Length: 326
Image 1 (cartoon, rainbow, N blue to C red):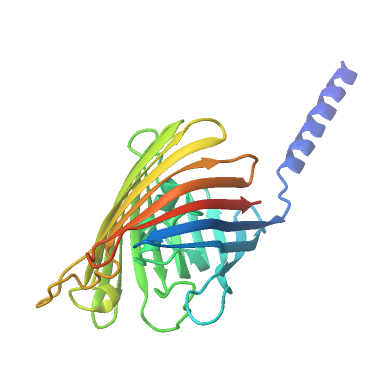
Image 2: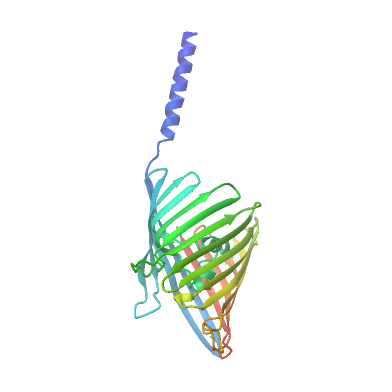
């Protein structure tokens, strides 16, 4: 009996030691890369234009110091769209993250909160930015701090205070952009979100967003409404618009997707046209995504732009988009 008792004690001692060792955290990190590239041909007013492009390349590293603390640095290689430079390197993310149970806090160059849920629901960032990002309602990243808390399976809340200039313009001033969001999951697979932010100089610029999405096993749909008031801190200028998108999974490697956007701006006193008519219009996207292997996506698709300005013609563009990531 003594031998049996001693064996049991030794067994439990070894089990406890093994369990304790399995709980010891080992700091670790990993690099990541993501590239957006495409070939396209555009047709408008009897003219055509074709080109190969690298729209974006992300290079970065993630590191976990402990169970609660981690960090991320991400370089964004992008076409600045101005000047003679073809590609410019920006710091897209550089932040410290703290997570404890349902609470998360970030500090540094962080992702903003205004359209992260919508971007995930749209799901095709390498083909087109989500509404807020595409039409410059807000930046995808900025210098600042954010917190979020998941109260239960139904509701979570988040708040952010940021520089307000975005990650491409690190202007240091006393003007901040402050935002608050609520996300609801009243039933399984259904997500609703409302978000509001504001920033004050001479006038107060503010934005409000409402989103509703449903994601099933083989399909997903989403709709959002966006409004930006006192655009650029000019009193009375407004931009608004809606975006609708859907995806159907035809097979394990093949999906069909579509999207419709409408961007509007208001008329100012004494004006005959809306103040942003040069950029107002409707966007149509439809295509097929094929994922031959993990980390590679190919998407032949059609993109059409119907400008509100009747002096401009409809622009049709056929794309072959590609995303590469690891």
